[in-house]
Length: 304
Image (cartoon, rainbow, N blue to C red):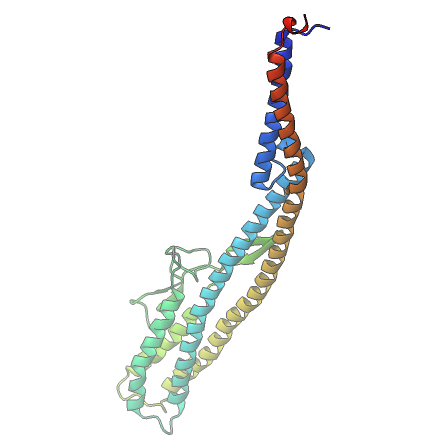
């Protein structure tokens, strides 16, 4: 059988190209450690890897959301804990002022500066902003102060809550959302009670035994306890939320580790097998080159 020179060359070139492509593919696999370089290498496994990567991206977003919410709740707790300390200090002053047997008018006047400082401190905490300049305790009205002050209003009505009770929900799991904010509603009433006490302290010669002033102090003392309960319940809710988030974070971490292990198992390269194949294709390529060189030098005169 006679073989045309062009046919021989085409066959040799095809063999060389196939071997070279195989060597390139194996080299890329060994360099990356992954046996799937393109979807056609293993269509079924490639689909599984795509699904795992998609799930891993979703889990990664959940974990980032949890981190953000945890930081937000920790900041909320820090500011509200400051409010609790201020309420405790104000309560102590009211208890002291109600002790008519040992409290003098001069003692009452010495309370003014402390009460003013505590009132302003609580107002500051209620209207604190985050790093983006948004009000933390205004519900969903983050561009509006939580509590506003009207200097023209009468004592007892100067402080108003101007936020809302809207919830900022953050998705932290499949079908699970966590509220990331808390409002300061209720604190304005206590600020108004402190304001009334301060207004009463401006009355010349005010006495701790004056019935009208004692009524203001008694209301403020009761308001201290009520506001303490309100704020403390918000802080307690943070603790429960943090526990839930920590559990979810652990679960997501375990899922992520499982996904990463599955991705490794599905796509990892068997280096022993790859090295054997690489050696085989190298030998085949070398043999093809030698055969091609040998055949290229043959002619009809070699057999005459």
